[in-house]
Length: 103
Image 1: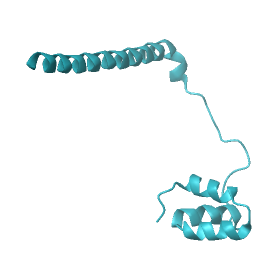
Image 2: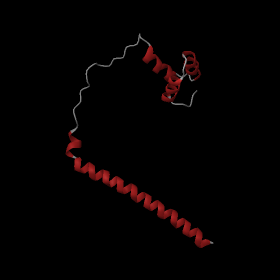
Image 3: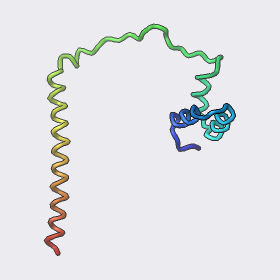
Image 4: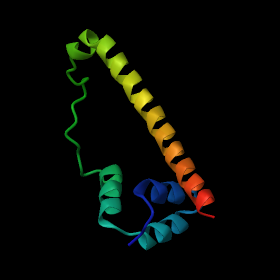
C-alpha cells in the first residue's frame, strides 16, 4: 500500500518518459482507488451520467442580506486569533519569568 496521495502518484507517472516505466510504476503503486480513477478516465465502455447543461443554481439571499453581519463576524474571528496569540505569548513569558525567579 502506498503512502503517496493519488494526485502525487498520477503526477509522478505523468513525468515518466516511456510507457513501460509508467506501467511499472502504476503497478508498483497499485490500489483500488487508483484503479477506479484510471478505469473511469480511460475505459471507453464506462459512461458517466453527467448532464451536458449547466447545473441549476440560485444564489443564496442570506449572504446578501447578512453582508454586514458576515463582515463583523470575520472581524471578530480575526480579533480572536490576535487575542489567542497575545495570551499564548504572555503565558510563555510568564513561564520564563517563573523559571528565572526560581534560580
